[in-house]
Length: 325
Ligand code: ADE
Ligand code: ZN
Image 1 (cartoon, rainbow, N blue to C red):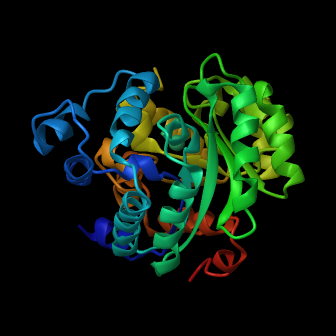
Image 2 (tube, protein in one colour):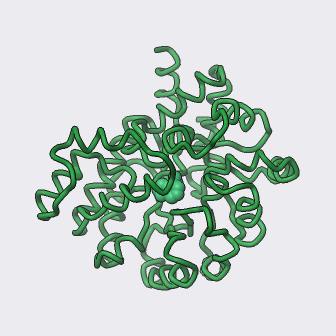
């Protein structure tokens, strides 16, 4: 309980959170009823139970995509972000850099403007310092990724979008395929991040760094399999956004995850702790800190250092100043 209190009290920033992954079963049912969308579950409890047995990333992504069908109007996106931010505030998260997946919504006929306006309105109202990161979804392919970013250009000047990210199905979709979109992002002066080394091996991390110019690696847990890569990441202090309970629930790491996390923490890489898709993995950010603290035997100083990393790894200049607060 002392550990839990300490984690709760620590000011934190969250840098790896998918807004679609914060869709709790209750809100999913409420929106489904409002919008007349049919769900494959009898009730909230059944939907929650269905979220406990994932065999891999792909398996999870199917359920995650199906659930987003309830998100139709600007207000739906507003409510989604508003709920997450309220939860974040309650956990003493001072800053959040939030991913959204426009291609999935566009494919369902939801305009980009609806998504961005709904999310932006919730962000503007929250005391949490928050911004958006537009993610391209790898399974849609390279050309579609560049097109998705191009479509967002009209919204960039007046929105809180600060970066391009890349998520979705990793295996078979190496970062080198997406140089066009990332080149476009650089030209637009957006920050660049990428999911890499979650299910894919260290070569995905290498490519994200060297070919996409990624300034932060999302997950990155499999970097450990390449000592030269780890050495380079220790030297550059490029942050990695670990999502330990996501890795556990999606079974993406085939060895002993606890050992692997301990090795990552000891490696000297700049590590941050995040929740990824908390409505699916059963824990928000604090739960992820607690699990890591437990398996790695971390005390107050180490936990404070991890929280400090979350601020120094942020792209928001006003947030960096909160470091060590
Ligand atoms: N989309 C939402 N969560 C994701 C994850 N952990 N990996 C890849 N794509 C995602
Ligand atoms: Zn993710």
